[in-house]
Image (cartoon, rainbow, N blue to C red; front, side, top):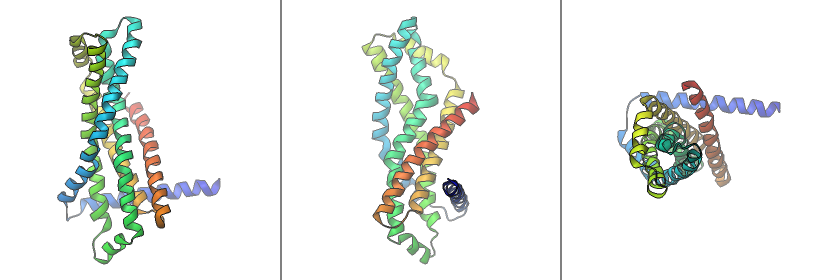
Length: 249
């Protein structure tokens, strides 16, 4: 148990130092906006389909479950508020982050891991190119920029998914669905979701880049690093979700 505890502490220290080095590298020139745009496309745009699909069915499930729960109290008119608040404050940032971790985070870890074991990262060092600056910084910035945009899309699509089930299928008044939502959802709710998306984007890109950049040897090392990156990112996203929620309540 002592050895395991020391290993966890050392690993946490390495991860924090890695993040510090990435931050320092990001602040120093030269800046490469072209690589950031390319990574935004890879991490963000190519995750759009799975995010939209997940958000549509999440909103539909919320509309279905919410209607039958609220109908027991004669409160079907607040269905829009329930769907919007659930998505904007909690489910939108968490579900979008988990989907991006599964689709793009694993790919980032595998890409860096393969470059590590094939000595491409060492070759960048020989060419006097900073591997953190060239490879990791664009991915971390892209993760931070992409996730808030994906969360916004997730929220909008999920709200309309709830509308389809609640209004079109179950007969809730369309005016009350949107009017109560507009009256009850305030800027603070949107702000909380935005803060969560920024933190989750930084977390998943940081963890996935770290695991890939420091993976072990061989195909088994890349596979292990990819699995650890996805699991650790998902756990940290849920942990951060709790602490941010408790902070803003």
